[in-house]
Length: 261
Image 1 (cartoon, rainbow, N blue to C red):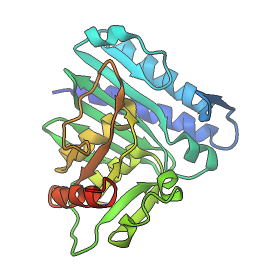
Image 2: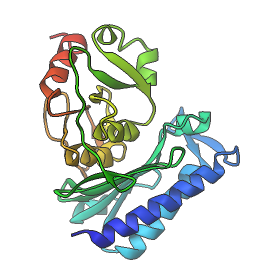
Image 3: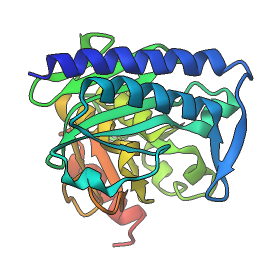
């Protein structure tokens, strides 16, 4: 199941990542969209590569990407590719190896196949619904031992604003860039959890969510609702991803430290 889709996606995402890495040596241009949000020529090139490769093979699928104008005809499609050509553009510009290409194939609102690729570290994650998750073709599991303190990956921006000050007193909080990459790292057992109480776009999290789920973890919003994709409104209110063992713990801590009971 999904053998051809997986082969095409992994080839396309590697191709996009290779081009991003090639442009990393200051050969990219920078502009801004929607005010302060960075946009580089690498974002646009990766987007074009992915769109050309994926839709040339699967022309009956819809398309939703951060770097493409949204065509609401996608709502009529059974399957839709949800794409972030570079999640963590700020880290890419700064030269931090914490950005990733993120692509998920959505069917009836649910991710069924996905990949997250960090070209700076040559880490290629992928997952297939009900079949598992892998890092560079080796199976990964969302499992990490703990005693009293959780290892949690957090947004550098949120940490800088002081939002994690009290939460960090009871956990080991590690700053990390791209949310797609954070989710992939949780899926591979690098941390117990990651979360954001700020709204995210579907393309930020769709691929990473499937990685965590197929690696044996759990993902919801802060109200423990399942997150659906290919919605008219592409913004998701929040996200919490963790190992099965720490799911209730992390939600309780978020409620006590961020949501104030």
